[in-house]
Image (cartoon, rainbow, N blue to C red):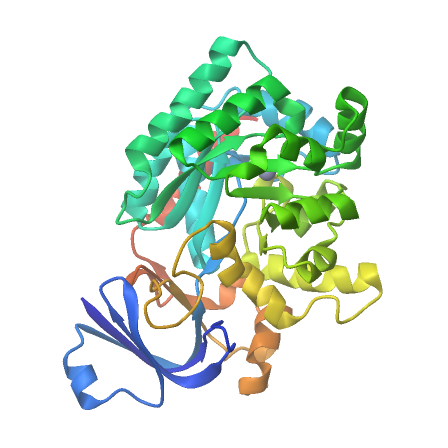
Length: 434
Ligand SMILES: [Zn+2]
């Protein structure tokens, strides 16, 4: 399969951050050529599929590094609450009543929302029906890192069962879906995972060479309780427990001090920044510019629709770009280029996915096309494209999505989904469990 997309302005996000009018040649699942100008007649003749980009913008697919697909139907179920109140009163009681069908409808709804707003890769931490979600992800063609979220506030027997399930998922699905599926090991958070259980998590991760993903230092209350219970701050404690010996991605990192930032840097821990969720739950503002200045890999995530409340990574980018300027009273605290990298190349780095997040030869052909012919993206020239993508665009400007060279969304039409059916099923489910 050979695809040519021409007449596009390409936002490569490559090492030189180059941006130009040109075309791409996709062979199998990767970029064979990324070039200025127009394709040769030979290139056009040998292509199975030729797409006229009509002057639109082509950029890497967005990478959402933290979320919980299974709870998508809890969108709007609990606003204006702190994290612990929201977890204890809204999330956990509702999720306890979810069946397989509910989780699958929620996951499919989330995938449709992500594709339609330009996300091609996502991380999902959830605790139910991961097998079925993995099958669904492969069927729909997205790229994903799935992790079985493990809460350790249970018997040792139950803890071991959760670890065994994670390892089984890893053995069964890691690398499947033409390499698009990855499985990580996911202790939910330090406040739900006592140290003996975290020791077992580390042993398991090392034995099977799994990436670790966890919530960490999300609220001030979490840090205070951790200090009271263990006499140490969470990041310090996680390092001592050995959690950072394996490649690790933490979600949030809102309440971390300078010493903890240094630990994250030294241990090459990546951070998934979720500004919308942190604001909505009143958790705080993560010290992202400080992390970036130390060279920590910072990516972006939405968290679930229950604390965001959508999965639009363009909104997440805009929020990330703006909030640190205001908070630091410094308009250059974050730039549009850094923010675009957080949603693309840095996302790939954070998930430890090779050859992803850039439009460059040899990289996987995950890309999206954005329509600039809208009043809110006008006027533009090449010098303004990256600014517009961060400060003016929204997910609804995405017209086409390709993953691994395959079209998933074409001319605003979803290829593998029955959108009407899933929306109707989701609304029916709402009547039953809220
Ligand atoms: Zn989360």
